[in-house]
Image (cartoon, rainbow, N blue to C red; front, side, top):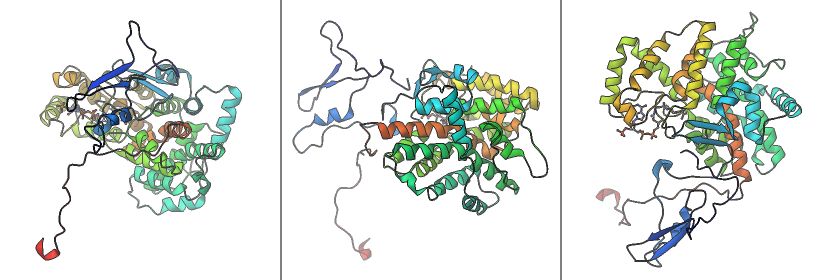
Length: 447
Ligand code: CMC
């Protein structure tokens, strides 16, 4: 499970027959017995500090590199059951949201906990629409990048630079100031992403249009040129909007953990989002969508799939089937199922992407192969999303940027929750030191 679900806000009650929600631990070093409470299916790591061999002992710690079994916070935003393949935002199944909502409603839901009514929705869309422009000097910052700069590198640096334009953003304990930065960040991410694309193409930037909705505006900034008008295809707008919904939040993943970690130092949200986006950039995380496309192109044809699978298996973890596997999902990623269905709709408009056949063959073989079955490796969100991005006309290098745009609402919802959490403190893990003890300093001639 990704999340331990309990009754809302309640601590688990004492069971029947004198059973208690507690863990009894015997320290074989001292013979002493301790009892620590179990709340929400967890024990507090700090409760273990009382377990000592003597007064000089620091106390017992837990060792959990990569947070394989550690809850770093409580949260009420996103629920995942990785064994069953369930994903919900604020209690609503992802399948329902993807079918009935647009991304703007979902971003509001993540941030405020409830779906907006008509007035709230209109006010929200207005606030976002009227913050889409970026400062002209920020545009000049973007101009300074080399023509072949990676779009994620440009996005990360430009979002970090944004903090210098809004110094009040440092007032992270002022809710009204926070709300303003949330509007700005959600609004400006597509603009920065589109400008990064235009810059890489050597084309003039296209300014946002207030008469278009969030996703249509983004596509227009990407593909309109001064020479001709551009009207985005409604099927493609809807497909991209659904992709935005699916990518908006995913509880404590690597990028969100970075957002919370940086946010816990009370850093401004622009710098924190830049840090979260840097984590997302990695090929094991959001960068996987770009890697999937490169992998499919590298395989080249359906008949070469078995040989590729063999290489992955023989590589023993060195070479991976990108877009497969997940830390939390040990079943189908529910987002991948929706994306696979949507790919067919998109291809009806754009024509079938020939790489789809390679992807389908990879999935077919992998899902029957003992190596993948035994390790519960299924297609994840990144396996099919790149094929849709490519069909829409987005270059491979910009795929992760399309992940970062909607994930911004999730990062900001998690950041808000962190700052409102009474247990919030600067994130500062412990370590197990295995290095040298104190030793004499050798002068240069004796080294
Ligand atoms: N291809 C081949 N083998 C794999 C793969 C894969 N994609 N993923 C995991 N394994 C193997 C791995 O070698 C290990 O085998 P063994 O037990 O023999 O050592 C076993 O499965 C468990 O893997 P792990 O690395 O311990 O699992 P993890 O939970 O640390 O990693 C993951 C999760 C997503 C990083 C990993 O599955 C992976 O690298 N997948 C490919 C990259 C990818 O698609 N990432 C996108 C994730 S979803 C979106 C997002 O997070 O942004």
